[in-house]
Amino acid sequence: MKLAFAGKGGVGKTTLTAWVADYLAAQGEDVWLVDADTALSLGQASGLSREALPDPLIRRDDLIRERIGSGMLHLNPDVSDLPESIAVDLPLGRPPRQDITPGKKRLLVMGSVSGAGGGCACEANALLKAMLANLIIERNEWVLVDLEAGVEHLGRGTVASADGLVVVSEPSRRGLDTAADVAKLGRELGLANQALVLNRAEPTDIPRINGLPERTLFMPELPELKARQLSDPAVVGLADHTQPDEIANKLLNALGRQV
Ligand SMILES: Nc1ncnc2c1ncn2[C@@H]1O[C@H](COP(=O)(O)OP(=O)(O)OP(=O)(O)O)[C@@H](O)[C@H]1O
Ligand SMILES: [Mg+2]
Image 1 (cartoon, rainbow, N blue to C red):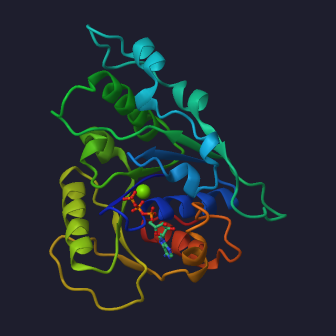
Image 2: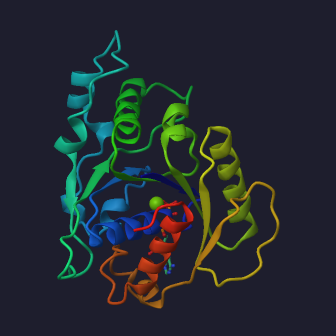
């Protein structure tokens, strides 16, 4: 199953992506984590040290030249070997269960795919898009994509081939307005299976805003995470991962997949 995580800045997209991945791996599932944000924080959120972070694909001039070329661009390159060759393994954020061999968590750091028509990082964009398309369209594995804001940067065909959109918001009008915009665009591009996660929120009535995903889940603020975030960028490896696991499980159920 391929899921994209989107929403306004700072609402918890990366946190939720890291939590769902860790939950899946703990259940024995292999999962690709794709960091498609400019801030490149998914690796550290998943417990990787800063030094161990790979160069984002968008800056891998060697690969861009090799696969896309320059001048006459090769826009449909073969990238089927690329995910395996550039991925970095992420540690499981908890002691493994005795009865389940944990799945692999593999991180792909892409950088941000810029929207159509902007400037010319054409070669880099072409490579990013080709790799995303390979993961999302051609493979049958768990792929979680942490996006910058909306889904449009994924490209039409790629969005339509994802299986679910997780729209993350904080309980604020601005967050919800962005969430509704992202959800509408997702639907227009053919991604109708959606869930809204209201992060740092207690279950409460939310205003009726046209376009929000119908299914809403609530994730409370975690004091343990809040207390340590000044000193540690990781959001996994908490002493108590009950609530992150619960939200991951409910979210996957809401999107139609029981794990
Ligand atoms: N439920 C929560 N309880 C406590 N802290 C949280 C919770 N969710 C997220 N945080 C903290 O909030 C901060 C922002 O979260 P995160 O980086 O996941 O947001 P984001 O939407 O990915 O941001 P950006 O738009 O910058 O990529 C992080 O420091 C994270 O540890
Ligand atoms: Mg983020």
